[in-house]
Length: 354
Image 1 (cartoon, rainbow, N blue to C red):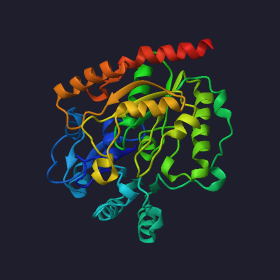
Image 2 (cartoon, rainbow, N blue to C red; image 1 turned 45 degrees about the vertical axis):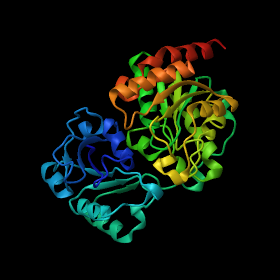
Image 3 (cartoon, one colour; image 1 turned 120 degrees about the horizontal axis):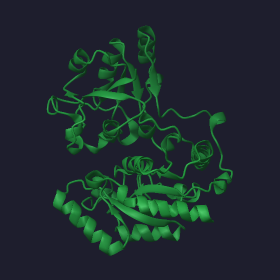
Image 4 (cartoon, rainbow, N blue to C red; image 1 turned 90 degrees about the horizontal axis):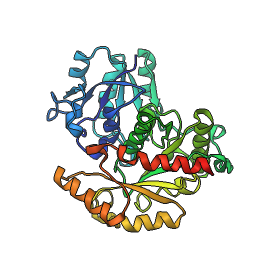
């Protein structure tokens, strides 16, 4: 059994806990049975805290209270993605307590547990495993770009955003699920640790890959997925954004991944990259669309991240941008993504007729 407790240590309601948010919404790799956060959120349901949907995932103030009620937990998953990938605060203390309790650890940060001799020795003594999801592949396991991507006949859709923590992975996952529910063979290529944690079979961890091999790893994941699944359509999970100065990213998906179609996410109330004025203002959606289309791809829809919006404001933004852009505008959290199915079917039909 892969029963897992997610560790957020007081960050559950922040964007730093986007890994936890993804796992709470769904994963095929684990069964999430609880979250360790803090006194302020203890006793509540993690799903209700996240988006108002009860998912029967209780939140605990500390690991001791969690394991007392959930003795069948096999894994503790570190559920945060911090700037620089460091273990925040006293999280290592909680990890050690979990190991002592016979619980294996899954870590998606850049600070690797397997690089800590004392932690490794304790895990060995307790018979548990330490999995560092972001540990780079060895050189012999990496792929260089070959051009085989041009043989893929299924439409490739990049799900990219105007900033970090926009909901790119969540939207890509929802699009794949919506395809399945509507008789289409949709597949998703993950590009971050959370995608793997959610059970992704095809993909790689973008920010742990040597730059020379990013394009090749992306191509290999897409080509392998297409060959092995005969997918009707393939969605690529984006990372960061085209113009976030802390880590601009996305052109690789359009050029090396040959994604000729894009779903673009934006948050109308977020003014600055990573909410930091010093990093600069997020440009208008229209200018991002212009850049994408100059690179040879077509924005087929935008999706609204409705952080800090009331329900009324969310639907008002949907109406406003639908009129401005004359393309579908999705509210993934409020409405799902089924609205885009006719567009996706038309892409598959078009490619099939070529």
